[in-house]
Length: 628
Image 1 (tube, rainbow, N blue to C red):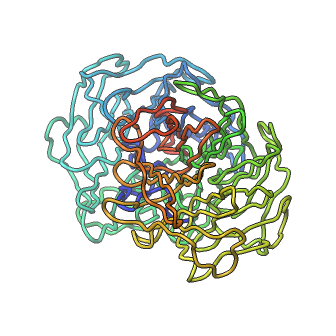
Image 2: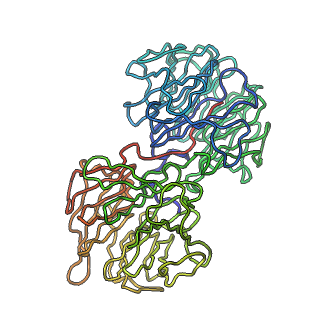
Image 3: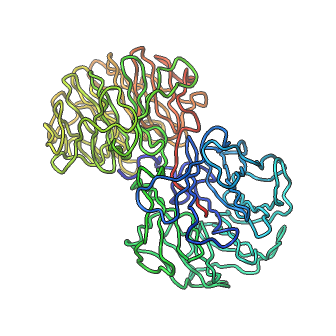
């Protein structure tokens, strides 16, 4: 599994844990703020999520540790993309709530020690504030609040609340990525323009189009897409470069085309996508790290003075931590009663079960999630006639099977895993009438397992080889006659197709039918696939900028022709379409972005969904920014 969530025409602007959220995706915050803090200070981490929260860990926390406190709930007013944190001298906690567009954009402030469903003591929001998709936050010695917006930094008086006017605004010609303040309240702004990174430093009290007192830029700096920044007691500047997967350190007062004094980089560092930085009073360096491809979300800690290929002293990661990677709904399936089962990385890795939706938003009735479940990047999902739930876990290449009605931290009944299984980045799952399990594996195989298969068992059949035309298969379905249908994502826009195999096909089997992709008007990015009782084929096509559902019917010769499409502004379909399923009444369910859209039987064209599960707040992210 390498790049399935990102349509081929979409390039995330940097390697962060929230690649689909504008603003929160590539933003940064400040280093430590307020008075000097010792090693006894707790660590705060923000999770962007459908149930957004602030996680608080005890000083010295390491490994798969449970948070000591969590700020989360409807009263908190935290949005799903809550991302940036700062503390003032009085211990109040400031959190930015970004948004696609201005709606919901705010800074919420919480009292010291706030926990659970705490109500903010203040909220700064409104047209007069100038806050729009904030991407950095800091508090100076006088408790003035600094907020970085895409092309500006706005400053507010201590205690500012409501639709408050900024007392100062510092403009920027480049995309602001983050801000920090030194002990003299000089303002550091990281920014990117045309692929080049810059750190601009303004004197305390700067306003308007102020002239910087220093600028760090040029080929020697190693800056690419600089994000989080922090300063140590000596005034040395630490900068996170996610595009280069390193931390660059510059001497106090660095200016111009300055070379870093040292850089933390290399395989031992565990850095893959560093985003935010903080330093404690002892000089320990804390970094939020995101590895989107490996589904890793963590906080990494380095000893004072760490340099080169340094080994972390501690890593906070694991399912107990509450730190999770970002994804909305992926695979889905339905039971005979119409309940919808969704494979999602929400809140960390989970299977969500919703009541059958008649209209509006469906109700979550159960959720399988926790350390015992064995879930890790769940994608493909299906159910057998007995109600057992099968889940494809991509990164560890496993299939986990859960009992009917499984809920909470439920251990799987069975797990398929090991070298003999032939599993490799499993994507789609399907079952035939005999209970055989079909798995689409990247880059080019279909493995089939007998009913009840478990452990490190070999498949009973494998479809693989040049004749198969399999190229990064994603969705898979089996019809009543045992024929296998596979959606092939292809490679770099080539070899996109739906391939169909005869019942019992094995080895280097040639497809008995094939729907070839065609740019720009045909199938371009097939993901999920479903086949109804009449042989009609539904394909979820995650084409940029707006996805569509293709409906194909076979002719007398067995060839498939497009019979209809579901596409258009009314459908609500985004460019990230994955799982698709049809219920007994013929309604079509498709995972789109952060929601499940439900369409009536035989819907075509610019149809409006009859129901939505989840909505725009459906995805949970991992650690974005932190503060002490």
